[in-house]
Image (cartoon, rainbow over all chains, first blue to last red; front, side, top):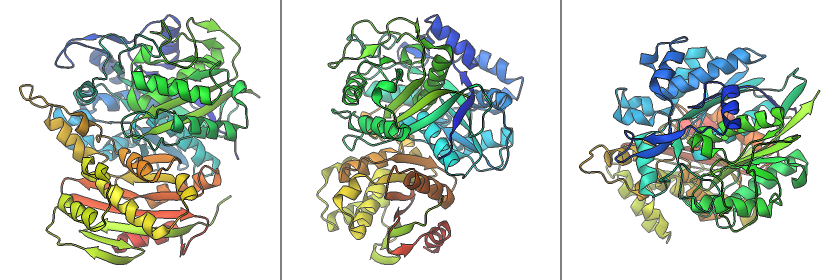
Length: 376
Length: 207
C-alpha cells in the first residue's frame, strides 16, 4: 500500500483564519466560546465566527453576498490550503466535502431552500476552484470530517486519485441548536469535556481543510498510518455503554498501522462533554489499553463543530506533533468518568511521534485515524 | 491491485414495487402513500420490530430494503456482523429536516422534538440497519446529485482491498417529499452475479 501524507492545512474558526493563529490561541488557552443573546430563544454559549470579519476576509477572493456563511468559511479555508499545497488541481485530484448539516439554515434564510441540498454546496465549492472531478460529499453525522480523511487515504492507496483536498464545515444554526436543546444536551456554561461538572455540549462554527498526497518532500511529514470506522449497533442517539464501535475502530486502525497501543503518544478525543459520550469514550480507551496515554478534547476551545470537528481537531493534532506540544484539555477540573484517563491538565512540551484522532456520532458511528510524524 | 467482485443479491423498492434480483415480488397500488405502503409491507412480512414505527420514512425505506436483501442473500451471521455499509442519496435527511424546521419557525408555537431531531441525519439509516442485524462493520454515507455507482464501487473495493470488510452492503436510499427510491446490493469476492459498475448502473436504470 502507498504511503499517504497530510500536508497543507487551514482552520477557519473564531480563534483565527489559519491553522497557526488557531494553534497559538490554543497555546494561550483562549476559547472561541462566548455567551450569545441572539441565536436562540434564550442566551446560550457557542463559538461563532463574526459575520463582518468573515465577509472582510472573503471579499478579497469573492463576493460575500452570493455565498452562504458556510460556503464562505469552506472556500476561505480551501483557498489557503490550495495555495500552500505542493500539487495543483488536476483531473486526478478529488475534492471531498464533509458536513453534517451543510447549508441547513437555507430552510429559513434569504437564500433559496434548495441551497440546503448538499450537492449544491459541493458544486459551489467545485466551481469556485475549478475542480475537474465531481465532488465527493460525506455526511456521516459528527464523524464526517475525520472519516473524510480516511476516505481520501483509501482512495489514494487504491489509485483512484493522485491527491485530494478535503474540506469540512458546519455552522451554528437555530436548527441544530433547537434540536440539541430538545435533547437537553446544551450546557449552561462553556462545555467541560470529561469533567465531573460537565452538563452538556456547546456548539461552534468551523471550517477546516487539508491537502492529502502520496508524494511529499517535507523533511518532517505527517503520514496517515491507520484508520477504522465501525458502528456500535446499539442505539441511534445514545452512545454504546461498552464503547463497542469506538473500541473496534481503534483496534482496526492500530492493526493496519501495525503498532501497539503504547506507541500512541497522544489521543485527540471526541469529548463532547455530555455525560454519556465522555463515559463511553473512557470505557473504549480503557478497553484499548490507552488509559495512560495523554488525552485532550478540544471542544473547550471550539465547542462541538459537528462534521468539521474531526478534521479541525486532527489538524490541531498535526500541529501538536510538529510543535511537540500537548495542549491543555480546556474545561477539565475533576475527572468525571468511571474509568482512569490521562487528561492533559497543563500545556506541556513533549517529544511526540504518533497520535490517534477519534470521533463518535449519532447513528452509532465512530471513526479512529492514526497519524505519524516521519523524517525523510 | 484491483479485485474482481461479485454481487450476491440486489433489491429495488420504488413505485410501490419490490423486486429482488430483478424479479418483482410485491406490487401495491401506485396511489398508496409511501407511509401506507411501508406499513402494509411491514404487516405482511410479520416483521415484529416495533422500532420500525418510530423511524422516519427514510429509515423505514432503508430498513425494508435491507430486510428483503438480507433474506435473499442468506449470509452467515458471522459474515453479517462484519459487513460494511456504504449508502448514499441526494436529499440527505431533508425530508425530516423540513419537519424539524416547521417546529421552530413560529416562536409562539415552538415545539422541537428529540424524536424528530434524531432523524435529521441521513446516516441514521445505517445505524438502524446495524442495530437490526448487529452489524459492527465499516460505515460511510455519501451524498450525490444522482446514484453514483463509480463512487460506491471505489469505496466498496477500497474497503475490501484494505481488508476492512469482506462483504459490503451498497446502495442508494432517497426520500424527498412524495418521492422515494431505494436500491441496495451486496458485493463480495464470491457471489451469484457478475459485478461491475456498468452492470450495476444497468440494473439501476432499467427499473
